[in-house]
Length: 528
Image (tube, rainbow, N blue to C red; front, side, top):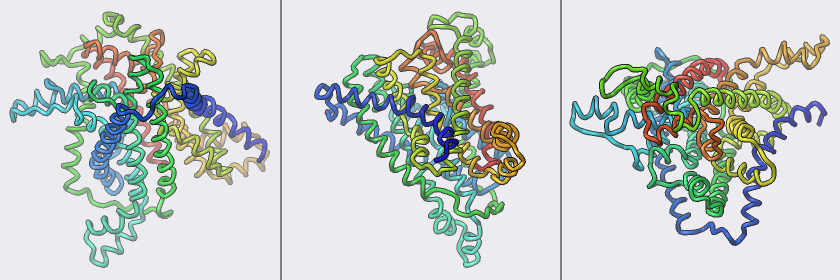
């Protein structure tokens, strides 16, 4: 291996080894030291594991049911406002969990928008899924259906329509053509996205904690309760070992399925089907039950439900210092530190992804690719637990810990974006520049970065948005001296200062939407 290749691999490899692998290794070492003091297979743990599987399966099924029709619409049809619809549909996947919880509370609550303004006045009925198993399933599906829709929609858009056209010539209907030709070809993408959605549902934390309520405990929630509330490190270690085992199996299956999911034809036709009639019903349903919580959460920060009028009262209270004691700091500090943490982690992700992706693409280093993408299935709570154990060996200030964790959980996205860019990179331009005497920095600044600009922007914005909305690891390691928007909103929500929490969360939701609206075009134009 050339010295230049080693230098390219080193930054990302060293970072992931230190910030990602070491905390997990320390958890295992800690478990070994405890030895017989921990009991992994107990009746309580069995019940928790069973419920975790149960809610994850149901949530994944609902995510598939919601996501597949949308995948067909964005992958096989053209319609007005397609990019806006796609951007809005992407927002839930990285929507801050506290924003989602407040959106569900505002929209589906007993006195929420759906019940107070529509169901009860019109039909004298109420739909109240909050603080129940149905609420957990709906919340998880709300988060993960975009994953199904985007991955499968991308696979549909790459299918060569020549096969379907041949089937129609032979007399096959549109439905038969889809079931017998297109569906088998996109099954790998459906399986891959569904398994990844299942992993996210399996490691769900905020949805279960805030939408399900105290009666429901998954592995993730129980680990948090052991560490933060009960200070039971032995119980947390036992559940963490169980979770690592299951997630390891899921990750292995995902890596196998991922190899089967890809582009089916190099010649992509621009042909698109006519927008179906059922698509209108689907879009209306999405507007009500998916976009409804998003919009209601934004509006609730500026709306007085008692007087039914717009107001800046909640924003004023938020920034006047009235609720600072409940936050533990100020709202301004929360915004500033959130931007600092998110920006820092996003910059690190971009820098590591540029070199790491290039090295993997050039050397076909499948082991490194697996290492760099495996955090997709990582539990932030478990990672944060590893950092707690790490503190026994040397001190890490909270900003260093949280930036490292944010970087780890968003690195796979940046890596995949830059890997896609390097795979499409016109090497002949690079070679021609070398012949003309261009050095490394000249080629990097004047050729490589301009060509990879869409992927760099996408990686940065995606990482920034994920970091802004992260809540689980931040809650476990939280230091009031360094508040974040998501934790401040959660603390306001927990102390029943819901209007102020909605106002703060509304700012976060709007920022997330605009990030993904501008992010959608680089992704779609480059077909990442």
